Length: 268
Image (cartoon, rainbow, N blue to C red; front, side):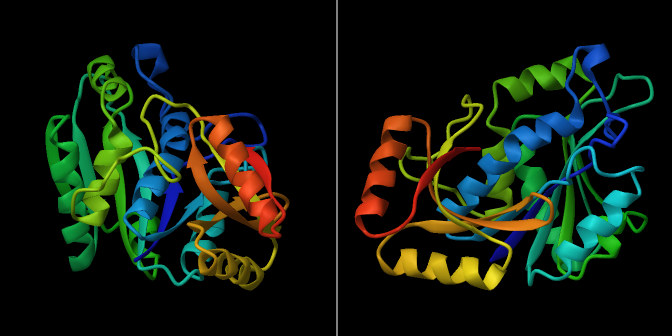
């Protein structure tokens, strides 16, 4: 399955974040939390042999929150995706609500939403799934889409649970629909690591060029993937592995160079 993981919200030119902020109530900033786990979700899904892109709005570029809509929909609807899953955290008016909720609008989206909800409910209070027809990431996307409200960012109790839980794995397992192996290694991910080392073999403005390099790497036995970034426009980065230990990344870099590929180490 080809999946696009998107992080809800952005940071505007003014420096303001458009997401909910639970920090004054002992919680977390919604945008920052999801930005911190999205690549781990992607790694788990790639381990389960899905093709995954990550989309995060460029920071300090938009003048208003509505600019996010055009930016995300253009990319979600032109990438040939089977599923779009957008990450959010909930917040309540009185800052006293708790639990997980997953939103959908289509019949296929309902199935995916239920699987994700069932996984998140193993850790958080279960608020169930909801059919919503007033959210553009559900109604204006060509692929099947779900919006994931993993927990309440303004609930210190929920955030305490999140600190002890691999929320990324729960979400990835729900999307995949079956258990995902979590052995460490080239594509492993640990919940307590704030970043991973990846070995990058190329960066292209053309998706076709990136796909050709990835195919070449796969043909030589590498578990390569294409990561999407926004650097003055969309950039397709061809990368191999996700390592906790830099020494392992160095070994992969040397192996790639010995096979004739350019290689640098980047952090994600």
